[in-house]
Length: 120
Image 1 (cartoon, rainbow, N blue to C red):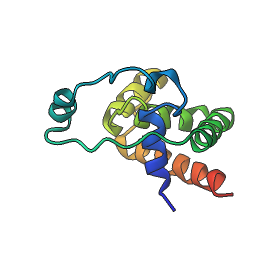
Image 2 (cartoon, rainbow, N blue to C red):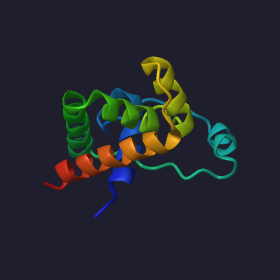
Image 3 (cartoon, rainbow, N blue to C red):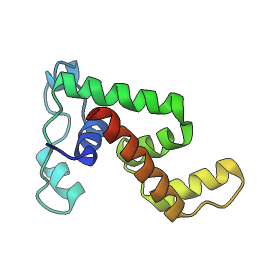
C-alpha cells in the first residue's frame, strides 16, 4: 500500500499513461533533471490510468467541499510551492496574516481527507 503523499506527488507531476504527453519524445533532458534535483534525480513513474483518475476525482471533490484545502493541495503538489510561499500568497489574498504552520495544518487535513476517500 502506498502513502497518499506519494499518490499526490505522482498525480501532481504526471499525467495519465495514455495521455499523448507520454507517447512523444522526452520533454526534459537527463541533464536538466539531474541539475534540477541537485544530483541524480529519481523520476517517479506515472500513475496508471485508474489510479490517476481516482486521485483526480478525489481532489476535484475536495474543491467542492473546501476551496482553501484544494488550493493548498494544488499549490503544494502541482506547483511545488513551499508552505511559506503558500502562506504569503494566501495572506495577500485574504488580507490577513497566515503562517506556514497554518498552511501545514490545512495540508495535513486535506491529505487525511484525500486518504480516507482513496481507501474508503
